[in-house]
Length: 348
Image 1 (tube, rainbow, N blue to C red):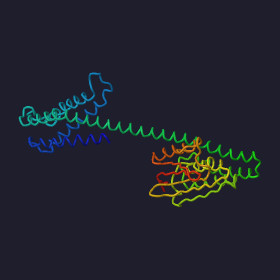
Image 2: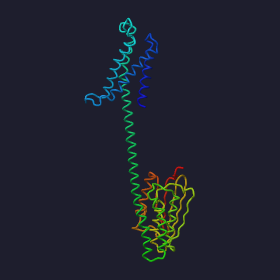
Image 3: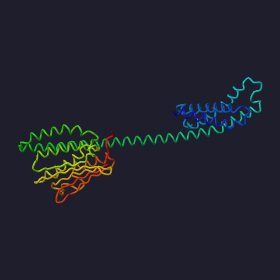
Image 4: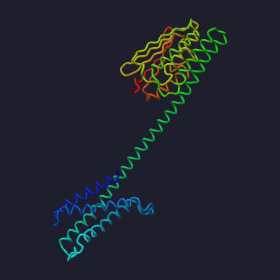
């Protein structure tokens, strides 16, 4: 590709120069243009040769200087050779014919005058192109490394979510077993069925809100079996939001925190309401519980411990900072955790 462009440039420039100086010759314009194109081809060969040879140069000699000198030398040799070959065998040598000698002088002088400057200009252009290419390569490499770092960070956060959720759920089952509840077996069966569906999705880079809602429903059914008199729940979601992308465990983390920090500590229990809808290109999700609320020393306005702080960072990584997680107290008691992020759908 590069060699082809060089060849076209050299031949085109030589043809233009031949056309410009052709009025000074008595031979047809095509002959003059052909001579100049031949000289341009020789200069191009010299330029390419000294671009790579010799592989090592002495410190006092720069590569660009060698190329300029090589092009000038090639032209100084090529023009006499062309004239000698073209007029070889004629009665009067070309250097004794005033008109031919004048043409020779014009071709040689214009070549030696213009070729070094053109070579320098080309070298500067090559240097600028190389600098831009290197800058672009550095930028692409930096973007790749940044993306790799983000992916690694996201996988680390994902790994933190898995034991956090699983250990909390298993602790709930253990409470039933320790208390001798007759529901322990059925709850354990529900947990096994739930984990079979949930665990394979933990390592996926993204899931959909529809899948999240399925897991949330299964989890709430599991928790309802554990405390049927203390937990009520309802899921309200737009059908259009089912195929919106989100990180795995997004809604489940909010619901699990609502159960653990809101409903479980409350003697009366409470109600959990999950709402999901899409508006103006944004996805809005709320998990509202009527549990004990935000307790002093236990939780803060910016999250409910490891689960929500990790979720917030995962959302920032996935959506490039264009995501929000807000936690607010409700009156007379309870908590509203609200998510907002871009509504993105999987490509068809």
